[in-house]
Image (cartoon, one colour):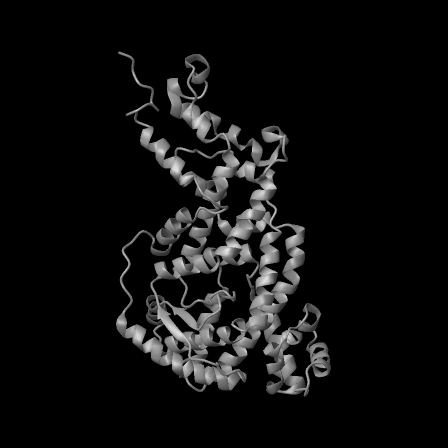
Length: 425
């Protein structure tokens, strides 16, 4: 009676092969099933997650009404319709954020996949990630044993592992992007208080997200009144939504971020070096091979992306400086602990955190202390020269958006907008 090989029916590796094939299959450039799984795990650390506290949810909804009114008064842009607030857990925040960023993540993955694919006719000999199957041969040989790689020539049977990984770049790319995207968003979800922890546009609509457990946990950690922190977060969310929700601002930022991620061209030699020690029998080694996502993305940034960062960072600096100014006007009279609370939250925003840094670098929206101060100087310079009321020019229409040169010279922006916007200030 002939014995079955390890990959034959009932063999010990049958389930492994079946699960790997499903894991590495994806109809698009990102494996979203993998992304969601990694996001869920990273957002909870694998621990059970309690439901949203209904008392905190109701209180946030009440404070949102206060924030809408005060931000409208302080900014000169009252909301046209009532905003709504959805209180979520970190896991739900991660899932909804993955969905909101899906177009950008797919564009990033497509750009990377295009640069990884060897030219027609070159195959593995063409260099780049077409050579990657060779990196896995030794490990797969150990898996196959007598029926593994090399056995096909003698036994007339095709090695199933070799067949499955014959087109490795197309298979592993969606998995890697799904894993990295989900891990980074999930890590960000563990600290997110609202949807604008990173100053990125969200899909159009009146709904805001808040994470009560994280908000209340921060209040307890810093011995601050919970309602003070909740109101601060509501003010910040409404202020960001006031500017990022304006169609021409959202369109401009979406375009700048899209151009940045679309210019992603991975250094295939660098990737091969990172993946050379990968053990395909240990999926955890994929994360180890890629290392810290923030440093990985920083090393992969190219000259084109660095040029595209100039207008993107300039505009985001002004958005952040404007939001901070509106927060000061609206929040200081309302929140008794506004000074120490704002300092603690600003420090939290700028501290070294791998999840936020990685996502910020991936989309080009990471703002360091110098970038934040740059935006604050611009806003202060405008007010010093022309008064607070002139700031409404920033977001009134597309001509009000400042250029990088104008961000560093507020007088230039004032002179141009005085001529271009009817009625002056």
